[in-house]
Figure 1 (cartoon, rainbow, N blue to C red):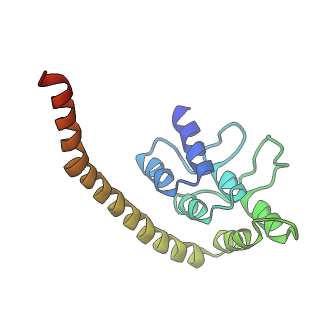
Figure 2: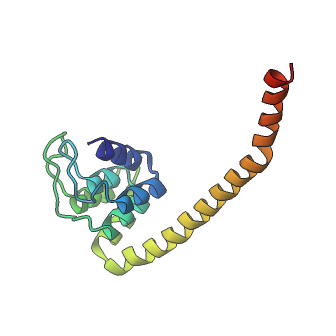
Length: 152
C-alpha cells in the first residue's frame, strides 16, 4: 500500500522519471486501483501527457473507470475528451494531445521515444550534479568538520 500511495503522489507531482522507475521496479502496476482511482485517470486529470504515455506503455487500460471520489465513473479517454471539449478548460491543448496518444498507438510510441530521450538527458544531468557534489562539496565539508571538531 505504501508503494502505491507514493506512486500516486509522484503521478500527481508530475515526476515522470520516478513514475517510470516505480513501474519498472514491479512494486506497482499501471492498472492498480488505489482508493477508487486508477493511475491513468489521475494522470489525465493532471493533464500530464508524459505520465499518460509512460502508463500506456506499461500496459494501462484506458477503459478502467474510477469507483468513487466524484469522478462520475469516466475512464481516461472520456475524461480527456471532456477536458479537451471544455471551452473554459485550462488544459484544453494538453487534453487534445492526451486524447491523441490514448487513441493512436503510433502517436503514443513516438511520444514515448521522445520522452525517453528527455528522461535520459535528465538522468545524465543529475549524475553530473551528483559527481560535482561528491568531488567539490564533500571534501570542503569534511575539511570544515575536521577543523571544527577534530583539530581542537
